[in-house]
Length: 238
Image (cartoon, rainbow, N blue to C red; front, side, top):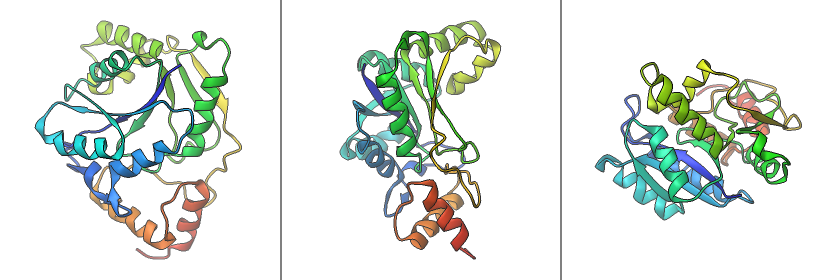
């Protein structure tokens, strides 16, 4: 079982171009994500999945230097890029990571990685996720998708390609919601947010500036729910 973390990122975001290279806690955001992923156990590889455009050359160089393998493909066909990475690197499963989610939980990811390693009858499933109380914090949790899930996404897009974008191919699952089978692992022991649930992705520069203020307030890079609770209860004015 070969599991890779796949970071999806490109430099041509219309809302915040080059956001993955912007400084967060004193490092480029993409570096923060890669360094976080490198601390996970039983993860075989970290891959940056980006476009083959020259605008992403710097992103690729920085990610490579930080320790990620680089996979490049069409700008707006994310499914093709993902399938290419699966084939080239002979992957069995992908830990999906968005390049604008720099606070994704290592504790949560480790639980589902270990759950995949220990699972019996894994061939019966396509997606592995956690079950708990963290949904109010989008950008904090993720899933592992087995190769079978991507085969089924490819089937869905071949069938419904006129209705859905290859950049967000997973939305086509609404056409046949029972097609993909999920294994849910208990993550309820991870403490839920007790102060102010927050969106933990960065889509605008104002959000990056906010999170730099949070990091400055804490004096360290936040990792756990408790860190965000501390910041949200302590910061009076930004």
